Length: 231
Image 1 (cartoon, one colour):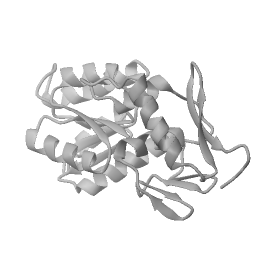
Image 2: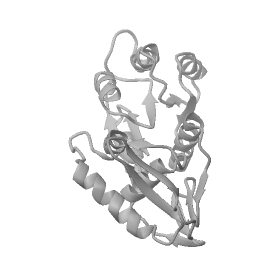
Image 3: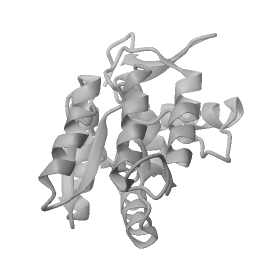
């Protein structure tokens, strides 16, 4: 998955970003309301982790982060948002939820809980289950792993990300642009050749699974059972 992290505390921002990336996610991290507004508009993400106390913007400090959230909801953006608040500040939690946040987490927090909350928000927003199955292929989003005939199928993080998107849920056509946007860095564009290389590697690894990745020219890709039903 891909997340936008908005946190002005440099140490906390780095720690959270590193933790999420080590878990196999891609993270765009910014420190200001201005950067958050810009990146939120131009880079599709699965969820936003938002600190309300940002250093720039009109009004009191908390208003800066709140305004970023209000602006996004005002333009119809329904990306799931996990708000970071001071643990003893009930007013922050209420303000964030009233502005359109989906959940909140008090500081200090456990890094494992951050990822768990984000995954839960994305699942709820996408209406997908923790496990998806096609033939003998099983993808477990909670564990971040794939299994083939009951045995672990080891995939690099980005290949897992591609497969997870294609199986959310199986049978859904995923456009090339969506995959490229999710897998590219803000300063690194993922071209069609690189994306096709990911797909080709996955196809080889799925041989004999009963699942196949089909290309719909001009549209994108989908995961479906093999026509002969072999597994």
